[in-house]
Image (cartoon, rainbow, N blue to C red):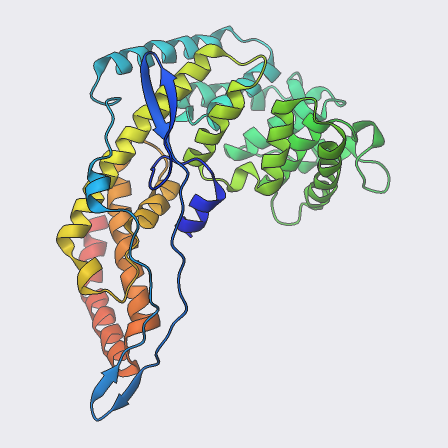
Length: 383
């Protein structure tokens, strides 16, 4: 799964074998690479037991393409250098002032959406929570009260749903005609249709208006791509969403992609863009530190060599952890999750590839008895 994630994006935080691309920032630079991955081969020999000799199956997995020494060499100065931290703190204060100075509800929603997509929301949790709470309470005068503004209504719906607020799908009823189609007056509103499409992925079971809206919006957006490519920024967002909706994407990879896209926006906020680039490099440095730790643990554990029949996929397991625990400050959780993922991968191959039925039954029995013995201690620990 991690391999598929890498292949789905041309940009990632952790380079491997390709040409470096350089980006300048305050006299320093940060780098990225495109990534290629080895594929899994089909299983070969079958297990057979004759004269007490066991012929093991083999999936013939390729060895990992991430060399230990190379992983250990991944370093940058964005965490150690105090000047970057000082600049980041100054920029964060400037963004907090934006939350105070922006009055228009739609502009506040756009500010939140931009900050989230750039991977900066963990810095502004209180400001985002306060802003959305006020918008949710003041439903009579907020942006969604404009019945003709599909973009504003869909953006507000998506952000409120995303943060746990109850919003009725009926807010979109006024944009539908008598037969349930999107009104013709909105067929060319690519910006509104895009946000309606993204909002539809926050539907609850049984919300037929959103289910129908998703199909209709996708069809109209595909038509927009064919007829209108004058607005490069919007065109890239539409194409990106139709491949995979924002709600399903991995936040850190999305942030890396969106930095490049936001940079092309004509009315971009230079302060937010500068903070996003700087913060991305700082977080990347934190991830590299986590990865070096996990790589050392895995090498010292030695399972990659002693159990050569199993997939040696530390990087993919680490990426999985980054997707599950994406808040940068939770590095300890990512390290633990990476270990768990790596061990689960080996155990999975023990069952799927290596073990005989008798061996697997014994192994399963041991694990179940171990779980039963440890359960009382675990329950006591939780009290």
